[in-house]
Length: 483
Image (tube, rainbow, N blue to C red):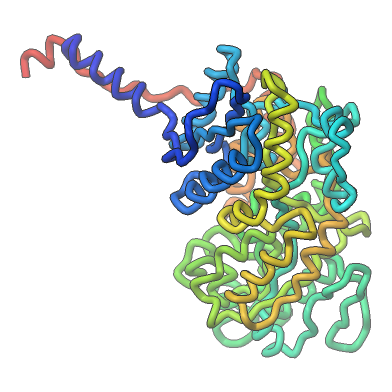
């Protein structure tokens, strides 16, 4: 490879990782204004519709006052965003605000976020409209706040009303502490034991036998009682029983997670009501398992409403509360997107003013394009009105609103951080593949969890071996010249 070619390739790589800056509709900042940079790309916010809304918010903010000039930078991809932010932080020139970004993607820069509590108190920002459980999502160990809620997605129980009606079963409860009425008329707590019994009745083979029947043929299942749509294994385990995974020194798999994993294995391979990986990949489960109409219940976050629009006029569904955890309490995991301030900002007060705008006046323009359910109650009606235009069967959205009051706190969040978090997530994915794949049938759950715990601790300490990449053949300059 010639030196010219090599330089050209390197230059192309550099250019490919440069930020894609949105088509700016804002004027160049005046000399007497403070520039605040809003960085987008660590999460959502990079499609054309979102960029248009973000540019409009920038324009509206700049027109609303004359002291700050807000500028926006938009990364071409998540990987580009991470690399760019690392470079800017190392150079001592980070952006002022980043978002929208979820809990997981925030972990890459966990030590870089500003504690907002002093700013909140100085600005006398009223947080009373937020449920305390939502604020706990962003509480730090020292009692501060790493962020303020913006878009929230509580886990709920989606259920197919037609499948319940066909089976003659009562729907899942819509209120917390409401019991479930079984077919014989008895009322029982809505917990994972009850969920399993109901799910078995809703799991049907090709001959019409349900999973409680001796004649049931699991190899020819045409309808399943349950799945955890698109959920990672940490979310599933947190659904069943939250735990603090990392205490700052050690990662520990709790007894609750061990029982939860055993519940999942039994649901998959003993009782056969939970969708396994082979079934999930089948044509029966298209366009996705719950939207296919062949799954009776799905426990998953509220954002899943985005994934049923193509069958909105066919699929009849509603939502109920998630079951009580193994501790007998309602523990609702919540996916959450928000905006964060870098502690390295040179203009914290001005940046906080912009942050407050994004979390307030900017919500009506940003939440719809992000598909976000606003954390602030005063902005929720618009979201619900838009959903009702799509899903006309009548959905009990109060379930989602009430679920926020039972949010799992930050130290037990399903995306809570630990050192080398990304590598740890990969190890969790391997464990999920083992459990939900054919290997899960005969897996020794406790032995596999012991391995997982050991590996996660090794990952947290930075001693876990990484795969050695296979070398890629690179043509020499001599070979290039000869060709």
